[in-house]
Length: 120
Image (cartoon, rainbow, N blue to C red; front, side):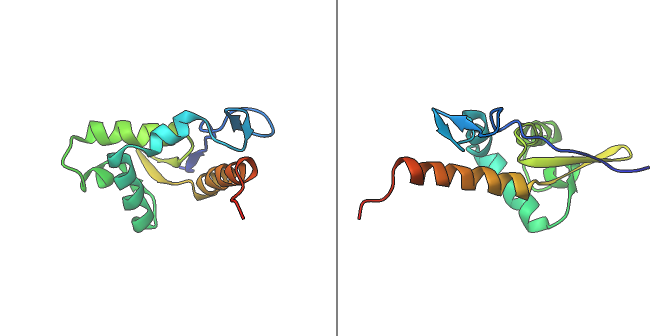
């Protein structure tokens, strides 16, 4: 069976130049909310260190909570485009969407620099 990859960009607002608060390039609050949870940050670290997609069960092995809780955290990250979900048969494997994450964070940094350049 061919793998199907689900890519999202929900963490960015619509239009050519995603923006929040009137500043182009800043992802909306849902993007940052997805990253501000300590468990989700640990999940991100685990997936980065793994260097390959992991199933919900594989991710959950590193956490003292139920698999369903880890699944909900993965869904939040996926829904914001931070993770990719690839279905392989009955399993879904999650990996970091590096391209989107780097683009969103660089966009934020550029918007802050444009709005509030450092004083010289």
